Amino acid sequence: MLRDVEAYLEDMLDAIQRIQDYTAGMDRETLEADHRTLDAVLRNLEVLGEAAKQVPEAVRAEAPGIDWRKVAGLRDILIHGYFVVEFDIVWDVVAHRLAPLREQLRQLIAGLRR
Image (cartoon, rainbow, N blue to C red; front, top):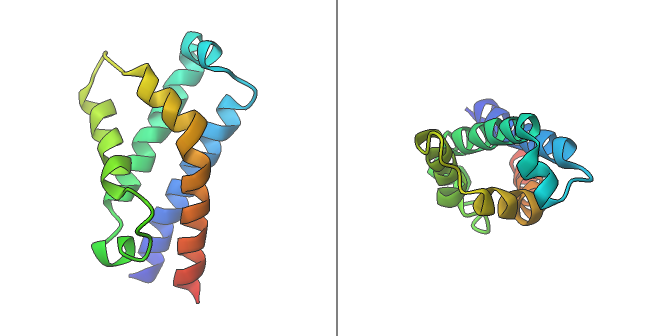
């Protein structure tokens, strides 16, 4: 089971890295206007949220600083929002929330490996 959990956590880290790679050097307006990059970002936010949903509650409890409901919930908003995406939310996540989440996930994975 531990391997499966780590795989989901690694999926989350991979999605974050891809988003950061895609958006490096971009500002809000550039990302909003670049539909191809925005689509890639949205897809990886979906992956991030879906992987978060697969992390068992016992493992989530090891990282109380992560708002697991919001991470998973963003996926639902994106999937069920169809053609209406709140870009302000997307930009806030990309610009401010991914880097701290990446660090928390790294710490969680390191703790699980001990």
